[in-house]
Length: 196
Image 1 (cartoon, rainbow, N blue to C red):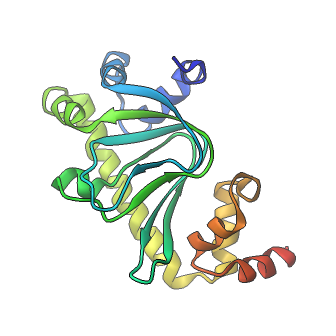
Image 2 (image 1 turned 135 degrees about the vertical axis):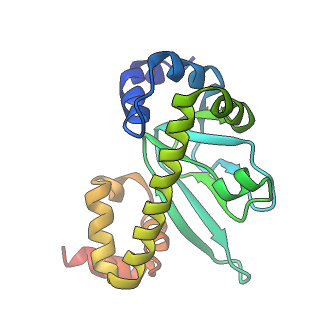
């Protein structure tokens, strides 16, 4: 058992409850269908072309999701930090192959939540269903905000926003990963950082 997760029980419970007031009994039902695992940096948890089976929650470390273009180039869609739920939700919900890769950028400690068991809990537990609905609404709003930022903010503004959201991002993952997330080249990122 990973002791770090056990130490963070209250923090994780508070995070889940921030979406919907879930009782400890319901939260424990969610924990019962989860597996605590340690994962090395560079591990692909879900890959393009595979139907995923899990929702993940990061307890420690940094992950990303990305797509591969026809020319082989990788474009980072999202960067995930502790106390974040993530998955290829479109693929999970529609039971189809994922169009994204989910990879650990650092050594991570995560919960793997069995999606099928979670889906059954949503059918039988009103609190977990309430959490599920509110979390999906949060994802929709987050997606919308990200698209607006890409259209209205320049690279420097996006970088500063990322640093505000993840203050130690420059020390957590390689610069080329940050540049991919910002949709700029590492050279452009170096120029932006040099002016800070």
